[in-house]
Length: 128
Image (cartoon, rainbow, N blue to C red; front, top):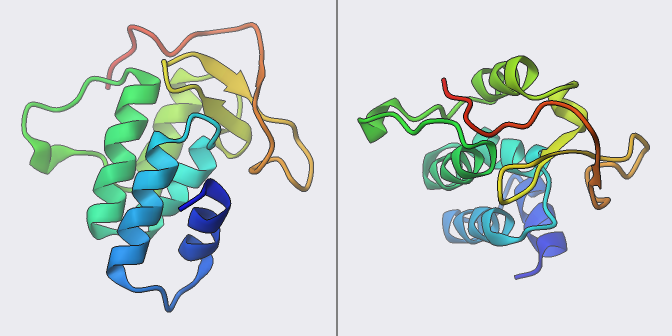
């Protein structure tokens, strides 16, 4: 599955569970996907949300809780974290797979465009 197909699967409210989980895994491992893509996986809940959350922890270098039952799985919680710890609005933010903060182009296709590097705070060594 490509990232484009994964995004389409997440938009399809009738998609079966296996396809949604595959879409989340595709988005999580593709280095050109955005934080917004991962947040959409959170919206689907279940294993798709857990997959996206693990990748969000990795990309932001946010400390993973000792108990996996305490993983942040909600969009609002992640948007709040991103707003507090990464410069800018989470809706136009992307974090590279290695944890560096990046800014996506702000236009109609921003969630599908490649992020551009910016100066500012890094997500590294931040926790919570």
